[in-house]
Image (cartoon, rainbow, N blue to C red):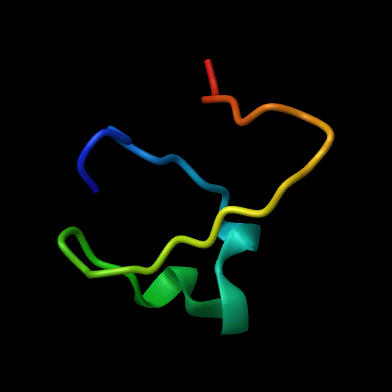
Length: 43
């Protein structure tokens, strides 16, 4: 994703309980949705 950098997400954000199936390097699709709060990275 050129220009985006890293994207961090919580396990609850992955559909169909798929988080446990993810491995390093697994391709994923990211869909941004408008909201009231800005995106933020966990500290």
